[in-house]
Length: 430
Ligand code: EPZ
Image (cartoon, rainbow, N blue to C red; front, top):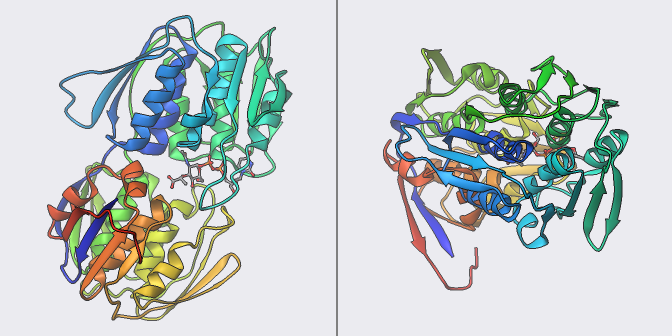
């Protein structure tokens, strides 16, 4: 099992390149199923989840080729020439939840799909009822059998008006892809407005779809007969950028985030500014600094975009664990997303969790310790805390990190972090 060994106390200084967004690249790759032409995606991050999604799409008959000579990230050319296989097997789906996004695209393209039900994960049960209800509203017949979703729409999908009872990124993306080829007009109300959803909508329009209201909570899709190929650059990863912004603040350093989209980080940078972090931006670069690493305590509540993102909650908790004062963090999106709190407490953090809220009382003297990562954002939270702590921190379960952070230790070492990856086959006793 890989581990990351971190020695804290080093202020980070320099420039970090921001990669393409994992949560944009995954649905964009699935969109290739909607046409027999080639979809070329640039600025694709080199991540384990991208490899797994490539494996899933190849299982559906999609040719996935690396296009050489990419200047930033990978460039993938995806071609779903007929015949398209319509079965997404458990052994792949259970490795990556975003597999469920093939449902809408397969139904739209072929009129049928058999997709293994994605299980829950560390942060919650993660149901897909909104995905299924929306597809049924569009005329699909859905059967749950043997752990699979068996969906069919032999006469094709038809447009419908669907109002989500709460914001769901995945359900919005799934139904957007289904609606692109449906007969008639689909209206998605209370749709997710995350930049990754917007990126998908722009790509679908470049492929010949007709989507209006992009970036708003009401998406109107006029179905078309067929989509064609396109070339599209994956939007920069706002959560990666936000993570490194916290790294600058928590170590008392100064980082330039090269390629970050500040317009996607409004709530994050506003909150960090109120906590005393200096954030300035211009020409696609954001400079983040803090003189001491000890911000003011500040409260945050997670919300769908454009609110404070749940995917930044764990990182923010690390920053508040060493803050000067107390902070109340309330998680409104997932029911179990404080798994990093007990691990931070092993390092001396003073955190009390009450249901969906955590009270964090800042302690400037975190101590390095062996800790266990439980999910993607919890793992990077522990790396951040390790860089601020005294002594050595060993983060176990690093495979979570490799799913969503491209070359993390390389990027951090380049700006002064004392961090290295080791192999350890002993039983892990954090
Ligand atoms: C996406 O997950 C992201 N993943 C998550 O990022 C992110 O945290 C989440 O959106 C919220 O922003 C990808 O894009 C691959 P949801 P998704 O549907 O689509 C409930 C990361 O760390 N819900 O917006 O699965 C659900 O359980 C990951 O990069 C239903 O009840 O999230 C959750 O409580 C973690 N029924 C809430 O809604 C449904 O049918 C929001 O989920 C769908 C969702």
